[in-house]
Length: 95
Image (cartoon, rainbow, N blue to C red; front, side, top):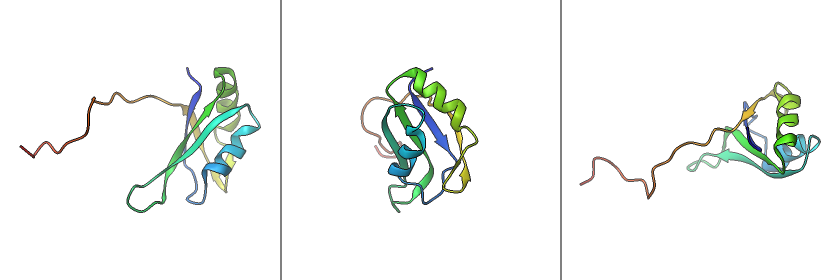
């Protein structure tokens, strides 16, 4: 478990503020972030919500999975941290 939740199925119109407001009724939200496409600046349809405690996160996960936010039913689960290689990314085709 952890205190960071993944939220999928977000509407394109959902913002950091509306995401935080939707989850704040279930505990103290430290951060709510909708992931944006780097090129277009549009939502990629998912985001993350970080709570102050694991208990708040668990309560919010149970309450918000399948809930409607901005007209869309969202999927909520605990965030899984990806293993990322250290250092900057580089193109493997470059020498």
